[in-house]
Amino acid sequence: MAAKHKRHFKRYRKASDFAVKLNNKYYRARLTDYSIDGLGLIIEDPPEIAEGDIIEVALEEPAIKAAEEVVWLSKAPAGLRIGLRNVGHLKGFLKDFGIADMLLGLKGSKKTGILSVENDGVERKVYFRGGDMVFSSSNHKNDSLADLLLRTGKISSGQFNDLRAQMERTALKEGALLIKLGYCRPKDLVPLVRQQIEEIILGLFALEGGRFMFREDRLPMDEIVVLKLPAVDLIYSGIKRFHGLREVSDGLSYPEGLPVVSPDLPDMYRGVSLDGAGRKIIACIDGNNTIDEIVSITKLDRSEVVGTMQALINIGMVELAGVRDPEEDPGERKPTKEKSRSAEETELISSIADMHGRYDVLGYYGVLGVRPHAPVSEIKSAYHKAAKMYHPDIHFSLDDDTIKGQLSDIFSYIYAAYTTLSDPEKRREYDESLAVKPARLTTGAEKARLRFVEGMIALKKGRYPDAEIFFGQATYFDGSVADYHYYYGLAMFKQKKSKPAGKAISRALRLEPSNAEFLAELGFVFMDLGLPVRAQGLFEKALKIAPANERAAEGAAAIRKM
Image (cartoon, rainbow, N blue to C red; front, side, top):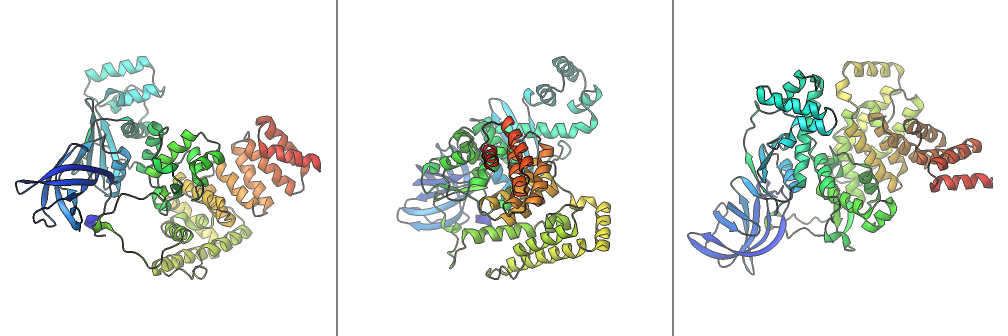
C-alpha cells in the first residue's frame, strides 16, 4: 500500500445515495464507507476524473460537507469506484464517529495539532505532538484544578470557595494560587495537572453529541505544559468507564466471531494498564472460547466481560476472527502471499520483534528474568531457558532474514548476560555500571505489566517454561505486585519445581497475607514437598478467609485422606 493511501482512521460501513457536483453538474453517487479523513463511493456515469481531482461532497447522513481529493479509482459494474481523502481540517459530529477511533487515528497518523470538541457550549481541547497526546484544556468550570481537589477530598468546600474568590481578585494562575495558599505543594502540582488533563480526556467518552475539529498546526508551547500521556491506556479506561455495559457488536454473537489476541499485541499493548478483568479475559482468549465461555471461566458478569472486550477491541489488543472489515478499497488491497503464517508462527515472530526492541533496555538481569542477587545456579538455569526461546538454530524454519537477524542480536545479548553475570569479577563491574547509569535500566511498571500479560498467554497455552521467564521478568521490573510473584511460582510449580515455587508464592503472600488463592496454592506446594502439617494449616487459613475456595477445600480433603 502506498504511504499516502494508508488509512489510520477506522472506516464505517454506510450505504447512502446522494449527488456530487463535478464541473458544475450533479451526478448520482452512492456512499460505501466513510472515515474521519476520507470516503469511499461509487459514481454513476461520471465525466473524466483523475487522481488528484477535488470533489465537493455534501452528505446529510453522516453529516459530512468537505472538499475531497481523489486518491484512487477503479471501474465497477455500478459505475466508477472512487477513494477520497479530506484536504481540509478533519471535522464532523460525534454521532457519526467514535472518540476512541478518533484518538487512535490521530496517534497512528502521528499528527501535530489541536482537537477541539464542542458540546452544549463546553469546549474541550486535546493537544497532539507527533501523534502523542501531550495536553488538554476545558472551559467547563468543573474541569478546573480546584474542582479536582475538591472531588478527591484534598481541599474542603470552604477552601474551595476561598480559592474561587481569590481567583477573581488576582491575576495568578490557578496552580500558582494553589501553592501560594498552601493547598498544594510545588512537587505535587505536575502530578495534579496530569490528573486534570487525563480526566478532561476521559470525559470525552461520556459525550454522545456535539461536533469536533482537528486543526493540524504547531502547538502554542508558551501556553501549555507538555506531558506525554498514555493514549491507549486512557482510551481503554474511557471506554470501560462510560461504555462498559454496552454490547460490543453483533459479531460477538456469531460462531465465527470469536475473540483472538491481535498478532500486533506487543506493539499495541505498550502503555496500557489492564485492570483485573482485562487480565483475566486476555488470559482466556485463545481463538476457541466464546464470550459466554469466557464469562463462565472468569466468573465475571457478562456485562463486565462485554464492556472489557469492547475496550480491548478498540485499542487493538483483540480482534474478532471471522468478522470481516468493510470492503477494502482497491488501492489498499494487500497482495496474496504464497504461504500464510500459522497463528503460532505469527505470535512467535511478534514476540521476537518485541524482545528485539527492548532487550538492551531490560539489561542483563532483565533479559534473563532473574533478580540482581540471584545465585549463579539460577542464572545458569535462566540462560538455558532463554536460549531455548531465542537461539537462532532453534528457529531454522523461519525464512525471514530480518527475524533471523533479530534472533542473532537477542541471543548475542543473552549470552553476554550469562558470561558476565556468571563471572564474579565481571558481575561486580556490571553492577557498578548500573549504579552509575541507573536511568538506562529503569524498572518500570509498564514493562512489568507487558511481561505479565505475555506470561498469562503462555500459561494459558501450557508453555510453562516461557511463562516462567515472562513472570520472572515481571517480578524483576516491579516486585510490588503480588500477582507477579504468585504466577511466577505457579508456572514453576507446573514444572514440578516445588521449592522455588514455594519461595515465589511466599513472596506474594507477604504482599497480600489474606489472599486465599495464594494460601491454597502454597498448601499444595508444601504437600508436594512432604510437609502435610504446614499444608493443612494453609488450607484451613484459606477456608477461614474464603469458605467457598474450591482449591483450599480440595487440599483439605486430600490431607484428611492421608
